[in-house]
Image (cartoon, one colour):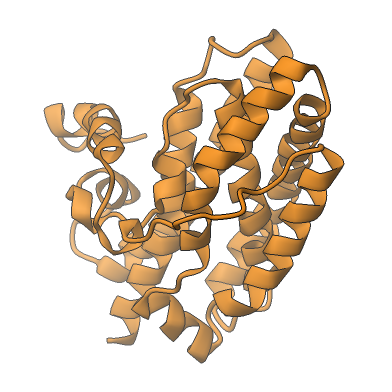
Length: 251
């Protein structure tokens, strides 16, 4: 039972990064400028590298013929544990940056706590990943300030993106049964404790960028328990295609 819970928790940790990495991968060759294109591609590769670490550990727990590839690609839609936030499409560069910023701040907080986990594997993954995620936070924060406090047009697009994407942010902190187990057992962070820190950091940065959070928001929950948006099916259709068409392929 303990190993089953740890397996599920590894999916919670890996799926957000995997789906966001897939979204960023869609932008390869399509960013506003070459330097930014390379940066977003590298962030995607960072996230997939972290996912491999989580899913190699998950495959060892599952045993049998399980591999990092089967864990990543051969689940059904309702078995993925990622949030609505990372499923959101690349509507424009503002949406890409705001989505990234909302996730990066959360990701940094979680990894800092995982470095104190009672699970040695999670400690090792967090220590290996934190420097990458520190850069991700710096990258997305810089662009939020640059565009939010930029031209009238860039400000308007950023505020629109904030207004649309904020509704998906609090799902990051709505603990599932497995995330509550992880917190209680010292394996993972207590998301309730991280939430006020997250809100303070996000609000402070947005104020620097002359942006504001919407005053009234109906937050969306459910993706972490398998009730994904229509976006998820399209993501998986592309993401899983090669593995299902040519079984036993490796990354």
